[in-house]
Length: 154
Image (cartoon, rainbow, N blue to C red):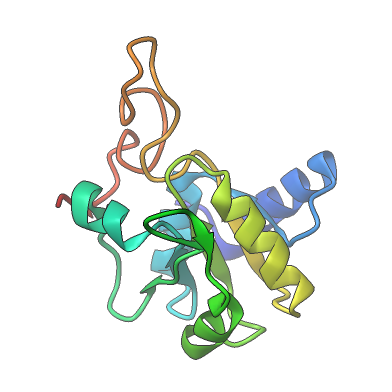
C-alpha cells in the first residue's frame, strides 16, 4: 500500500506530464487506496442514473460515494445543476475523484470542478467499465471492474 503523499505525487506527475487543468489523474487502484487512506476523499460518479441502474456502481466507505450526473438521460442533456450538486456533497478543499464509464466525462467534470475552485479535483483513469475489447465489450481490458475493485451490479 502506498502513502497518501506517494499517491498524490503520482497524480500530480500525470498532471504535469499531460498538462491537465485539474489536480491530477489516478488509476482505479490508486483511487481505491486514496479512499481507504483519507476518509475525506469523495468518489463522484458522474454517469447517468440509467448507467447506475443498468450496470452497477463502486462499493466504497460510508459517505465517500456520491452520484452527480454530468449529463442527463435520455438525450445526454448537460446537467445545469452539476456544480450545485457537487457542492452539496463536497467542499472546494475536499479531494474529489471523478468517475464515469470510460474516463471521458470524468475529465470534463474535473475541469469544471477545478474552474469552480475545487483545488483537489482528480480524474479517475480508465473509468468504471473501461475501454472496449476487440468484440466491443467493456469490463474486459481496463476500468474499476476489470481491476477487481469492489462493485455491486445492477
